[in-house]
Image: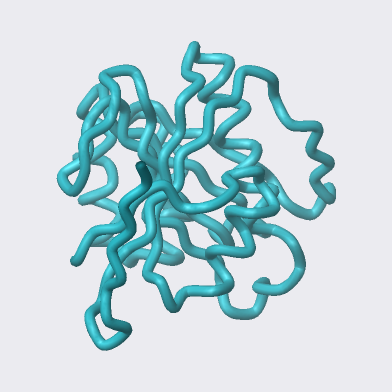
Length: 169
């Protein structure tokens, strides 16, 4: 038996997507863009200027603190020393819904307004998932607001399929 719950549109809620993937994507990145996957505060410190270009100096300092935990990872695509697409990953923990201990929750993700629509967000997400696969992960979760259609298109391009759950934020 399948049970569905209709949530009224006036309530803000998130759609949750889940994907199992063991093989990397084939991704071609234009040479004007550079992908970085940050695992530690030291790596974050090396990319402090790029992080600060989108989050400010205080936000970049907070990012370094987040990277000090073994569960937090950050990815970026940079152009000319400036971050133009950024995402966060949390290993084995989510504050909103239950996940497997080895799963990765991706988000939030962000792409600069002037770069949006050029297909960069799916490439950034795929490159991050490729790195996570190399690190031994195969279960991925991501969520967004029901009304965030651009994010839903990014998820679909990356193979996330239909939402598996929802929750009120």
